[in-house]
Image (tube, rainbow, N blue to C red; front, side, top):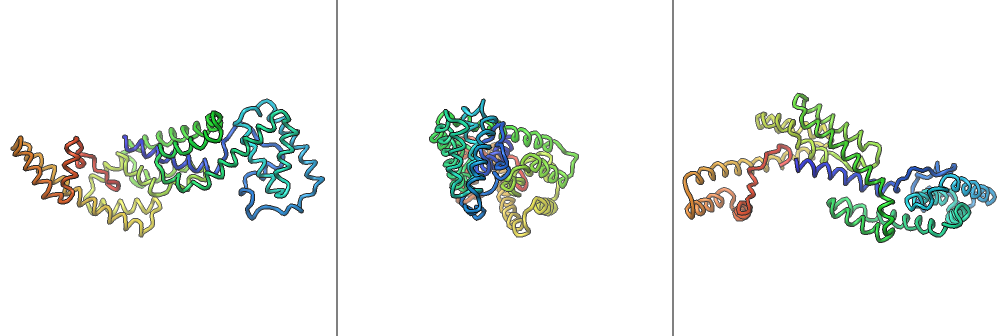
Length: 344
């Protein structure tokens, strides 16, 4: 169960990283006007930018006034909330795509017109969010490689550097959304864990469907690939109960088929099969060791037992004997762990 918990948490981490990089913090509000319809394209400065000459000055002035009025009507009661302020980065970027040369000046003018008393604060919040967003694009590869605790520490350190106490307010929705998705996938996995009457193939389909339904609306779904799916799948009790009852050759063939169905290539499946063979050999040695160890414990004690175990570990594990001895000294016996075919 602990392993499964950490795997579910790992899925949540992957999704969180993608959300951070690909989406701005969310709030229950919308950007008014037709500019908002173009707010989801690439960042300003990309090849999709339009030449400044394509946007007439008179049209820009009229649109500025209209947007300022719509912003004031939409956000008048909530604009003091930093979580609302930072969402206006989307409007700034939409204006920059539409009018690269003057978009920033226009955005500043719109904000000062709509919210004259809070304009400086709003513009600063938006600029800080742009800084944070750009930082996320730069460090995304590093973030994905970190574990959850390291990732959280890195993200929250940067958030608090930029926003201080406001960071908690800005990212409340993200925390709630991540927790919701974690509960959804945990529930689906718990059901599959007990689905003993369901075929192995059907469980692959149901797991992938659960992942798609939970994360499919996010671009982050692309980060949850066959490796992550396989980790969760081969940890299911309902899967292991079937695999344990199979003859070795049949079991390995089935594991290969299941991996292919999850999206592994033939070459990847072959490489994993080679890893399985090495693990099988280690487990055979380990289980044999545990049987011989129990026999020694039943016949010997004290110094005689200690010396006999040292000899046995050296005979079975060779260079690993000292590592095994240290593990056992602190009460850890690696070959008392459950054998999870396709996993360990």
